[in-house]
Length: 113
Length: 113
DNA sequence: TACATACCTGCAAATATATGCAGATGTAAC
DNA sequence: GTTACATCTGCATATATTTGCAGGTATGTA
Image (cartoon, rainbow over all chains, first blue to last red; front, side, top):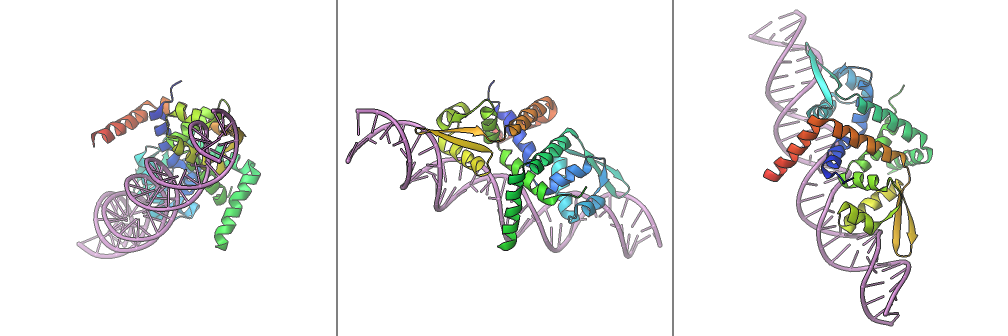
């Protein structure tokens, strides 16, 4: 098997898109179906502008699709399979107690500093 | 289910670590067992210093473990499950023909500019 | 001891990403 | 037409990541 550099590069782009806490929660939220931006912003407790920017990123990469209903923009996952990666990843992180603890400690340290 | 912000943050860290073409190939390479740095550098066609920096990153995050044999440093995956994510991801990207094509086009564009 | 090998670390420059804010667009209600 | 609402875009700044290079450490060999 060759090392398939272009495929690795493409996959890195996909992972990079997922590798943000807001976008992880966003994709997890869309797992159950489409949603408008304001509702999403409330559920995720994010400023709508910021959410819009995340959505714009995911839209450009064709990871989400948009549909309009009046002045609402309804978003849905274009590749629901990716939501499965996130579900698995969250389970993995939760199961890995010591490392998760390390994460919590990092958080605490941030509060201290 | 709450939104589990700290867990999402932790998972984002993990994805960020994976989200680099060199590191994707590196993890894929270690999938079959431990390997020393020089051999890895040859297989992946990377400058050893660069590879060493990637390994250092993964080591800090405890995604790889190290063992020494004389002057060789042998690395192995600490969480082989993650190699599975990459195998799946590579298959996903390869299957998604149009997007992969878009990736190739981007590459071409970079050569043009 | 001197030298080569195998890796690592620190630093600095280039590049990429994240974020807030100000202003723009499109739609609907009055 | 005017106003309010839902969302988007552009821009500037802050922060993080990537990369090469110079120099360092530890181990084996002559």
